[in-house]
Length: 235
Image 1 (cartoon, rainbow, N blue to C red):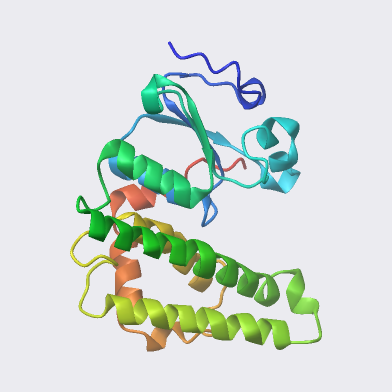
Image 2 (image 1 turned 135 degrees about the vertical axis):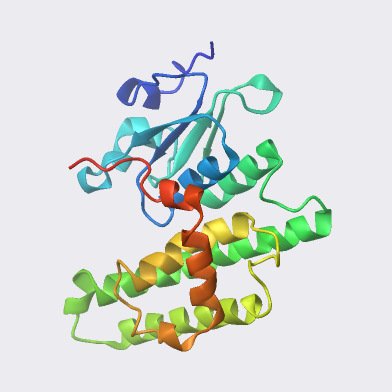
């Protein structure tokens, strides 16, 4: 049985099944990337809810796993060479899990790197820009009288959606007929933009043809539906 006692986070969020991958997360657009991935590949795991409303990501235990204080993070008790592997950053976790399971990533080197570039596109562009738009449109930023920040992020979010629209023309998924970690990285963010953030009209989402159809296809997948609610939020 793997011993996770060397990881301080296991003292605050004890593992009931230390032989399973440990997921520390909350179902935000970044968090659901990993829960969806785990549901898709069928790897046994144990999910721990990290209450970001209570700043639990800033506790010493969580920071010992991710010094950046962000979800999600994992510990794989059966990492490379059989040693436990702690890992943070959702994009890195997606690549790791795809490699570990041998699933949801193309087998050829060229297409593998092409897939990873779209994960980086999400990490470097879609996530930060959609998140800023949500802040200035729905949250405290909407009280700022100067609307130039909102307009900046609205235009950039709309441009990024245009990039996706072009990519998806004639393709079911980002990589064509093959559903991959590129799709998983993006689904939660696009869903959040038009749903939770209420920015559907703001970015002219319904003027697009391919992105909405892709989103519907992704959200119809049973593993995606399950992953969107993991870990369960407390009432």
